[in-house]
Length: 177
View 1 (cartoon, rainbow, N blue to C red):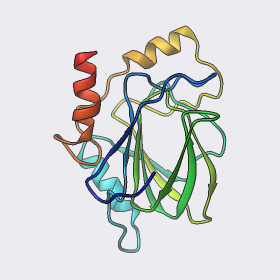
View 2 (view 1 turned 30 degrees about the vertical axis):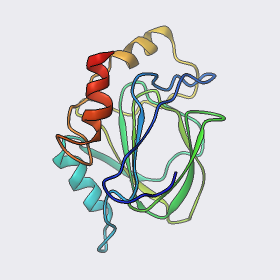
View 3 (view 1 turned 180 degrees about the vertical axis):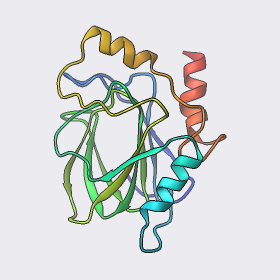
C-alpha cells in the first residue's frame, strides 16, 4: 500500500482463501494518513472520529500476530502509533504496510494478522453498535457463514462520515448485489 494522503481510499476485495472466509461482496477499505497524529494522546482523535460516526471505540492495543477473523462484527482499526506489516486475507493474503494516521475498515470475515511491527505500534479498534470481535481461527461453520453474510452494517463511514467511502463501496454494493 502506498500512502497517497488524506481523503484517498483504496478498496481491496478479497475472495475466500483456505479456511479464511473473507468477504466476497464487501471490500476492505484502506484510508492512508486519514487522521492527523498530534498531541500527547493521538488515539483520542481516532476514538472521537469513530464515535462521531457511529462506530463506538472498544479498545487500544496492537494486532494479534496470528491469522484470525470475526463473524459477528465489522472492524475499523486506526493506527495511532508506530508502523507494521499486516497480512490481510489470511495465509498468503495481501501484505500491507501501515503507519500512524492510517485506518483500515475490515468487513466481517476478513482475515488479518500482524507480521511484524515497531515496538510502539498501537491501534484503536471500533465496531458498529451491537457487534463485537469474536476471534475465529478455524474454518467457519455454515451457520457462521450465513450470519457473516447477513450481518448489518452502518451506512455512515467511520472516518469520512455520511457521504464517505463506505457509502460508495459498501452501501451501493449491497443494494446492487
